[in-house]
Image (cartoon, rainbow, N blue to C red; front, side, top):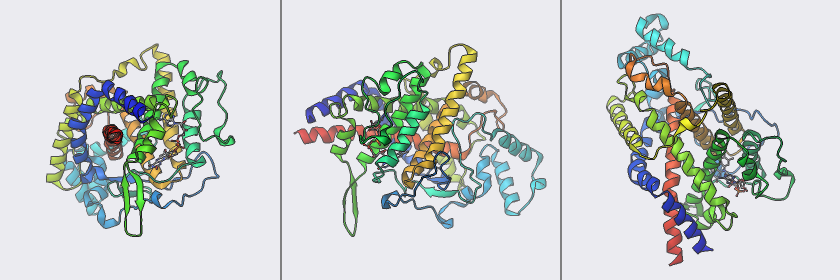
Length: 439
Ligand code: FAD
């Protein structure tokens, strides 16, 4: 069995060896450095939104699910002042905003250009081009969380509650054609295996779907595979009064991804993880002109560090752009214009629904990372489908482009990609752990 698992992983590794090498050597180290900076580690999130889909929703009491929000003093001043939102405005405008804010000044004290920049920003800060729901950062319920202090790892969240979330994501939101008989409701059966309905379940109805809808399923499945890779790689191995030991749990990984144990599904799920990686990588490559504009700042109020971070970010994006095997997103939504528009709207609505489902995840730690990763993927999709606006950017006056990203979108985009990049790296770690076990 061990042999089979290693050979399954090896085949996958061989097939994806270009991606592994590129990720592990070029992308991963730069990304980790960037994500440890203040701009990217503090994420503002509302973990107290009510679940909009069902009411029998309980709080999870698992201790590993707890999230520790930041205290006032832990968050850099520059992030707390509302001027961070306006990273679009030129630097003197940011300073002007800050001054006005500190003095408690009303809009009237801002220069015409600053006011115009803010108005432009607000105008674009709307729902229309988004693929996911964003939390209201101004709500008193939203709090900053230090992502480095609340890492994604094993929490013990499982059973019917976790299945209900995955089930509702797949069953309700994956455009399943109604003519195909639905699998049994897993919550009504004793089986823990929701979707392993080989030959008549998931993969059968997938065959009948158009390329966009299949892509959608693969993205969700890739995200699921990534989360399950993380929990296997940062598993609670031992615990006593003084410390907890976290590390790789090879048999947990095998249970989830071994070809034999999952009746062939595991490797497909890992392929979906690579698919998700490629989609997000492509989005990073495309967004380069947006971040390259001199008017863009990764604003935290610490000028030297902010400038260094921008340099690092641009280096990373240039590397992403240089990848020779990019996903070609023009194959999506390429048919009849009217149908393609309709499909794109469906895609958007469905993805927004998935981001709402994250408010139903009982385990707060899982909810935090689930929200962040769906927001990040939503942002990647927004980028991929805003090609014309982004391409027009270098020719435009630099303060008011027609395409905008909020700080929340930027932080979630890079951290979500950081998760997938870490998963790809963990696959290599599991491969060597498995071959050590064999020897
Ligand atoms: P599950 O992973 O719950 O899967 C349910 C069924 O879906 C499986 O039986 C299988 O048939 C199918 N399936 C599994 N993987 C895939 C895939 N990639 N593609 C398609 N179908 C698939 N747990 C933690 O310990 N830490 C976390 O940070 C964490 N975050 C989570 C975030 C969210 C949003 C959710 C919903 C759950 C999270 N969990 C987390 C729980 C974790 O994902 C599993 O649900 C849990 O470990 C139970 O696993 P399971 O083996 O019962 O199968």
